[in-house]
Length: 110
Length: 113
Image (cartoon, rainbow over all chains, first blue to last red; front, side, top):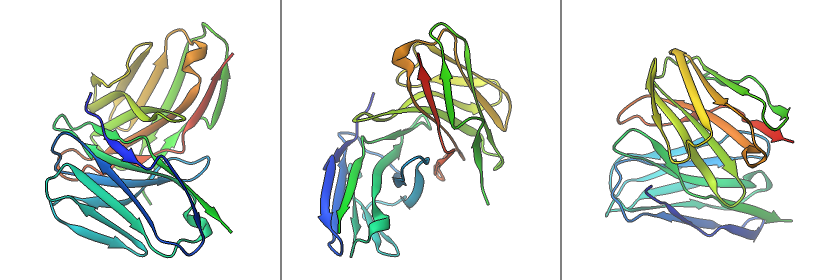
């Protein structure tokens, strides 16, 4: 199936630092989604992107839909302890199925 | 508040048992999904349903089947559970087309012994 390449696989950062992660694909998609999963819970949608070039913010989170429609990035500014979790990118394929990257596990050091 | 509810948070089953994982959504969504999540592999799609009684295989359907008799309910069935099906199972639902934002349940952690 179509693959999403998400990087980095994990990150260890200091509290207060900014975070950046990205997702790429060899295929074009019309919808990019970013989710966060906290321990023991299902993923929760953070940001949805529907237009190439779109830059969308949700509090300290900012995500962009790449102009080529083959990539997206997520930035978190001034990280705090509750940002810990696994962040997933996802896309909707033409057959309506939503597929996910392998995730970026974020660790925050005190 | 939108909700996707999975019937069990934790399950332990024996090898060879038939296992049912149930999922109910209250958002009147047409699309429902079953994923499994394993460390380092992310979320992999098992089955997808875009309407009542309709189903499509995802990327890893082997060893699983599904049932969607009502719009709000989507069941995942392990016909004969095996130890390699020990995993976290996540159900999700979404609207079709442009508003493809999937909403997830809390997950069922299944252990097959």
